[in-house]
Length: 585
Ligand code: WT7
Image (cartoon, rainbow, N blue to C red):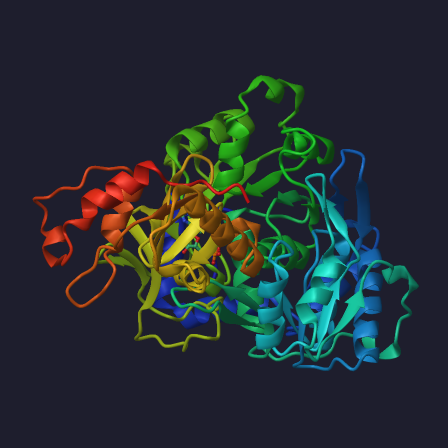
């Protein structure tokens, strides 16, 4: 199989040709790339991401870390990373962790966290990273369900000027569970055990890690990814879609708590031996210039971020931008939620300075890597379109939903049967234009997307319904200028409440959600209503709540209302919406 890798994501003709080949000769296509990228047939990610580069380029920078303050910077070379990984792997082995065991990692964005993921891979342990912003209750559930007997964390960290007491949270989370803590504050003090000097051999189909994500059930789903398929797919997509090369300096603003932080902070960039910048602060602290300062200082060439962050930074205006040099950039990317035209234009004009293509990449925790992305060619760029399928991926739209016609790309989570004949349902709404380009518009199932964070509405409702004052509830996503979507909760109560009582119940709902999930799930609006709109069979009519939540007019002529048993409740809900409570906690 011969084709020009350089041009495959740039030139539309080459792209079409390679795409056709990838579909017609799917098996040979993946096999060709597997053999090219895994010349040594070694599927240990620690070997691929660290040992190979430490042997060839020991003093090359692997990670540059920036902390909360402008002056906080650390640089970790590949040889230093190898030693860190070996030390953590040694400590895990000394504590009895073995191949196939689950290890939970709950850490801030520091080099030790990346080293911890790689240390698990090194000994064949299955890491289970939990976002450090989740509450102890949510962490406990994930430690327990994944049967992790070891939790890796640090004493504390600071993010956006706030102290995060990680150790205290983890202690609360694992109280009474059969799990112990390994603190990674002083990795230098660990010694290297002979057993950790070489990476454990791993098979293509061995599990590499798990990650919990929200679906439409009450419980978060545990997603499994395997060593071979996952690494192959995340590496390939990174190479083609970002045209990534060893000489690039790459900055992705996600967090290792999400799949983006797995595929495109840890595994793909280090697979190719890049210099990767990680940042443990927030884009707004101490000023809104943090990302731009890092881009200038590190001469970042590829910058991958999220629509919410871009909208938030765009809202600050352009005055400060002239203080920064963006000339090192050659490609931009965004992921996690639908982009909007004005944020896209702002990003393209001001950060990319009309020179850099924007890779609006659509994918999911389940898909392992990018599934749709635009070609590099600037003249072909369409704002907010994720445009083209990656090689081997066959997308289609059925009843407005984006579906993938074959479950055979290597990155697909092993939770799903790798079956050619079956369709993969994405749960996203999408459209396709006359050029065949895709645009993803948001979820069609009961999942909301707040600043790129997936949240199941039934997870929220089960928390709200557990309060004594609440009879029933329905949580929906409503549009939000910065966050994309915000959470709005409609609830009925067991008795009539006075206005002050409503305020206090609303506070209680909000703090309970914060306690059980975390601050990202905090509702923006709580609306107490006499009755939820329902069908004859007792199903809550969420689409009606969505219309009211968006403060749009209800169309009484539409067939939508015909299935409703309690038509009269609509007026009451509209009135109650005017008095929605915005909880302060
Ligand atoms: C959901 C997956 C994939 C890494 C981050 C999120 C939404 C993701 C886009 C995009 C529109 C997007 C979808 C998807 N989404 N990327 N470029 N345009 N929507 O991973 O937490 O598994 O969430 O994020 O709704 O289903 P995740």
